[in-house]
Structures are given as structure tokens and as C-alpha cells.
Image (cartoon, rainbow, N blue to C red):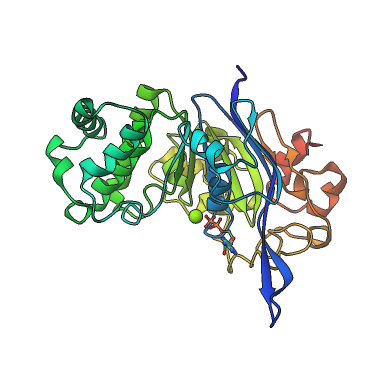
Length: 349
Ligand code: ADP
Ligand code: MG
């Protein structure tokens, strides 16, 4: 049994752009462009980044809703990059996903009981046992057993998402992909759902890929975090490390936008202004470093040269020329370069 449950290697998803009378392919949306990461059994990996950075495309490619145009995905030692429909069915007994919108993922004409019965039936749970299993599942997600008679429109957003979570865990999967599971919910409900997910992970021995645009959500949940920008991972590190000493200017900007709640956090907070400007279109990604159009430290080399992920310390990697000793001179005046220069950095990918 290998330690990592999921291995994503150089994953690529390009969507063709078609135009004209003959719908010729005139370009590509590089939604995911060379993404690699592992998730170990029982851990939570957070994937964060602004809207449009390719997070959902990665999730949908893993679960087979979209096919990769390059790279590979391995689950529990088996290549799952390109599966047939029947193989996908099999995969989905082990990998489940919870989507952002709790309403559209539920059939409005089915009661909670009818919804939760489907996966139980598929797993061969006898009819006589199904109601007690459903009651049990509802209790696990902290809902009242009586909720099983309700239709989605009779439930709040948070309650609906609890049903989606109950459905996902009902088949006892190994990996749960959570694609912005709380983004559509009130702030007061978000923390409760995150806490529930944390409890369920322990109880059911689950592995999570936790996708969000909200960094503050993952701090206490994810062991490691990967930061996406325009289809690429810009930085990855132990989550605590990432918060205490973010290395990539993009991560620094994301962190500086989070409200602080203590003096400790204030001390750690990067003193960088909020990000200016819009995220460029993945149809037309900037040359060189993809972040250079919004980076406060960008120099000539950033406009021209692509950047590999550089190992920055024992735990982290950042896709930034600042950490390339060859370019040290170009960034002399950058406040974080002192840290950068102190760290031995080597190209990693
Ligand atoms: P995120 O989840 O981080 O917001 P997505 O993975 O949804 O990002 O989208 C990444 C990029 O891919 C976006 O620019 C989006 O418009 C584009 N995209 C997603 N799905 C399709 C599709 N089916 N056809 C063309 N472009 C797409
Ligand atoms: Mg998304």
C-alpha cells in the first residue's frame, strides 16, 4: 500500500476555442497547465486560488467528469486518467465529490430519504435496513431524522449541503473532493460545515482534497496547501508554514487580504498591498511568469522567462524567479529577498 492515495502528474486540461463558420480551433483555454501534487492517506490537501484558476477543472478531471488532455492521475496505485464508463462507476465508490451549489446537486422532486436511498440501493443494502442507515447518516451530519421526509426546498442551504455530504459518505469512499463546499453558504454556517467535515474525516478515515478561494477556511483543516494561479501551482507548503512565511508574492497578496484576529497574526501578516487588477484570461496567458502582470516585484526576466517551482526550504516550493540564485541581482531591492537569499534554493521541477 503506497502512502499517497492520489498522485497527479503534469495534469493538463486545454479547452479548444472554436470560431468561424467551420468551427476551427483557433486557440486553447489553458485551464490546467502542468499541475502535479500528491495526497497522502488520511490527510487534507487544500487547493486555493481565485475564481478561474482551474480548481474545479482539476476536481472534475480527477473524478472523470472531464477528460485530461495531458498528464496522469493515479489513485491507490492505479492509473485513472482515462477510464471507461463502467470503470468510472467503480471509481466513484471510492472517490466522491461535494459541489459548491448545494441546491443544484439535489433533485428537487426527491425527498431526502429518496435521495439517500439511491447510493445505498446501489451498494446492495437490503430495503429493510435502508431507513435505519439513512437515520444514522442524518445523525452523522447533525440533522434530525425527521428531515428525511423533506424536499430540498424545505431545507436551508446549510442543511442541503449536509445532505450532499451525507450522500457522499454513504458509500464510505476513501477520497472526498470538496469543491468550495461552503462558498454558497452564510458565513455563520461555513464554520459549522468545516467543523463537521473535520469530524467526519476522523470518524471515517477520509482523505480530502479541499478546494476553496478562501484561505482563512483551510488554516485549521489542511495539512498542506497548494496555491493555484492561471492553471498552475504557484506555491505549495505545509499550511502552517504557508501562513507564517508565504514565499510567493501571489500567496503574500492573498494572505494580506485576510482579516487578522490576533497580534501574532498581525506580526506574521505580509506587508504587501492588495492585488491590483484582474486575473488575466487563461485563453491568453502572460508570457514568462504568469503572475508578472500583477506582481509588485516583477522585473524584465519575469516577463520573458517561464519559472519552474523552486524548492525554498524543507517544506515548500514557489514558482518565482526571486528564489533562483541566478536572478538574485534582479531582485536586490525586494523586501523578501533577504529571506530568499538566506535559503538555498534549487530548481525542483
Ligand atoms: P475555478 O474552479 O478555479 O474557478 P475553473 O476550473 O472552473 O476555475 O475554470 C478554469 C478556466 O477554464 C476558466 O477560465 C473557465 O472559464 C475555463 N473553463 C472551464 N470549463 C470550461 C469549458 N467547458 N470550456 C471552456 N472553458 C472552460
Ligand atoms: Mg470552481
